[in-house]
Length: 585
Ligand code: ADP
Image 1 (cartoon, rainbow, N blue to C red):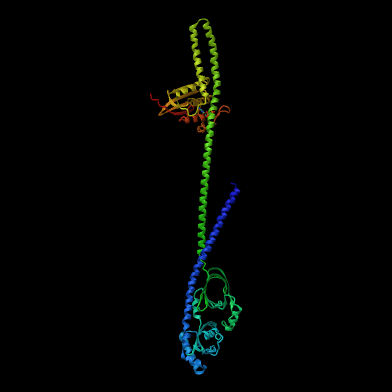
Image 2 (image 1 turned 30 degrees about the vertical axis):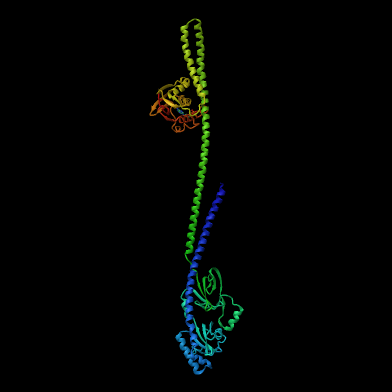
């Protein structure tokens, strides 16, 4: 794989891990934050329910008051005619007393035109008495439907409040006027002010008229239509109070009444969890605004998610790396096996070829020696034959018979040499395991090298246990022995003291055949490699470095071992072969 491609792949993996970490952490943080907000919103919504109940209870407590008072015969009879003087004074005091007892803000009695004829605040300069409230919607509702309710800023007092009214009727159900109770919510607002939440109450038009914090009252939650504005002008609901729009937009919704909202409020732009709860009975909506809590959850969730993500990615990378390695290992093992098989095949072929060519080389070498070996006796024999003819011509028969003897010996020896050569050149099939005597193999090998041994004046010491029966291929074993002997002779070539010792000893169930020489031995650093193919210390053209490698293979093939070590005078090569037991008769 080119290195630029590998770098690109690494870069991509790193980018994938980094992007994945950021995405997962971001997603987890967002999810945890949203989850915590949903939880917050649920709590706020529960609290909002409690606030709604307290407001509802407060209103309900006073709802019956004007209805009950409207049944008072004193009021009814007073409204039958014009209310003034002592009657009015008595009514004022009565309403004052009841208002004090009921703990309501104000009680007032309107006649059929909407004129306040008596009121609990008659002592104050801002008293309602004498003002006409016929334009107020709750009066119109009371006249037409028997009761009315209306939240408004007091036209006279300037104090906002909730007006609840009931019709005062005579016995014929004719409308005489309206009994009105005004509720103000300062206590409620004070009570609500205690928490950090913002609590607002808006009317059906979306105008906030109760707020527990400054700056929120008389804000429009949605733009008013021109019809709404015209009606507000008539009813003077918020009288002279300027209505200011409240800018807000939803960032995300949890349900239809629960949102995360950015509000351009009195404190500037702030995000709130905004819960709303419609109050059906009054047509109002109660709102609770809460700042979302900055929790550790998001950060923790992001860290946890990043950790999980990284663990998963690294586990996957680890597994894929292991799989890749296993695949590579498997592939290289298969390749190695294929290679080993191919090499083994090649080596076997090469070895067989080498065995053959080494034999041919040896044959060549031996042919030269033989030529020399045979030429000499041939010349001698020719001369002896001439002598023999002369003896026969002279009828010297006894002498002639004597002269035949060395001739016969020479011929026998020559026949042995050539017969042996014939078998040596043959390419014997591998795996031949005939029963043979190692001592005979030694004899034959020495015979082949006899000329050289004599020429080089080497003294030979033989300690051969015979017969030393083994199983193997005589030709191949002889080839091994020739190799060992020739190497020994080579090692001693330049030495003045030349001693060759060949031993065959019995060793438990093995025969050990040793070849020792006085050639000085093998350098310590070469001991481990003499059996390697092509290892040679001989000059170019003299040694191929194959003799020992082939010998080693042959001995192993015959089930034996070939070893080397240094002895005081020179090297010792030993081959061991399993003994072949005597065949049962
Ligand atoms: P070659 O005779 O062609 O070099 P061999 O495999 O028969 O190949 O021998 C390998 C090497 O082992 C020789 O070159 C020689 O260095 C070393 N060697 C083998 N026999 C002897 C010995 N008897 N004494 C010293 N060195 C030896």
